[in-house]
Amino acid sequence: MTELPPLVNPPVRTLMGPGPSDIHPRVLAALARPTVGHLDPYYLQLMDGLQGMLRSVFHTRNRMTFAVSATGSAGMEAAVVNLVEPGDAMVVCVNGVFGERMADVAARAGAAVTRIDKPWGDVFEPDDLKPVLERTRPKVVGIVMAETSTGAWQPIEEIARLTRAHDGLLVVDTVTALGGIPVDVDGWGIDVAYAGSQKCLGCPPGLAPITFNERALQAVNARKKKVQSWYLDVSLLASYWGQERVYHHTGPINMSYALHESLRIVHEEGLDACHARHMRHHRALKAGLAAIGIGYAAREGHQLPMLNAVRVPDGVDDARVRRGLLERFGIEIGGGLGAFKGKVWRVGLMGYTARAANVLLFLGALEQLLREQAYAFAPGSSIAAANDAYL
Ligand SMILES: *Cc1c(COP(=O)(O)O)cnc(C)c1O
Image (cartoon, rainbow, N blue to C red):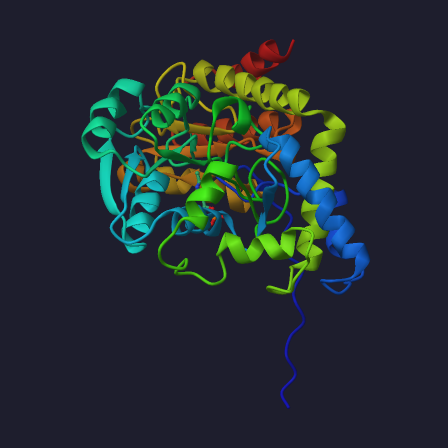
């Protein structure tokens, strides 16, 4: 047998992209704890704890609040395939990559999809939806709260009210939102919301928190045909996550430890304090970037704190800056996707990444790389402006 090389130590990065974000050492340590069986009383108790903490971050009392054993996109699939039967009308709001993805998932599930498109970086107003809801009377409406491709912060409350008034079920993508900005599932009347472990919850990728309210579960019960996906069928998952504990699939034990620990960290800090921290570091970063002439891609007043999509200045080589950040400073940021390819940088301040040390490190590194490309600005001014914002 040939000898296989051992896993070489992964580099330690500062993850300031669109996710995954930096992982707290306590969460990494949780991953290495002993694996138990997925029906072990210890694990069942851990599942209860996870569900309780997820209910409080989602602001919900929904019984069916759990984590799908896969990444955020599986949360999206789970929301859509459970609610949609072939031929059902679904309206999807598209102003970036993840709205696009939801429209694709819905069409694959057989929905009669009506898209409402807005320019990238913009957000939806209730009036954008109203005529479409009146005309198509959709069973389901899908919208992204934190569009990670554009950095736009979509207000949900009025759109939830409007959807309810038209007897629709509202699905909200809170993959990047959860833990970074307030999400009020019960207060706003969201029927299904899903998230991902690796964004503002500060856990590695691999789990998708999700919550279904009773209206959504009634719609699943009233289906004429079985849910097409066995793995994501919430009626089967209810027997595993509910009191019966019937085997469905093998729970990802160690990932559950990690999510449990990351949620404990969020709760120790306090949800409000956690949101305020994301906002504080966003303001410092924004002030720093403004001082060197770098502005945001998303509409003013609707910019996400945890995902800063900023315009690459004219004449600056996008890829060269990102390569320099990674190779010389160990900092990962995201490039632009789709319509924003080559035009924006996506600087994440999610979860454990949202710290002053990272904001100042990034601005310092960026200044050095921009000076090498002869981009004109007052040296040191981004750091001074960020520090002013902190003080
Ligand atoms: C990251 C992300 C997803 C997809 O999550 P994965 O974990 O990559 O599958 C979906 N929606 C939004 C808004 C995201 O930011």
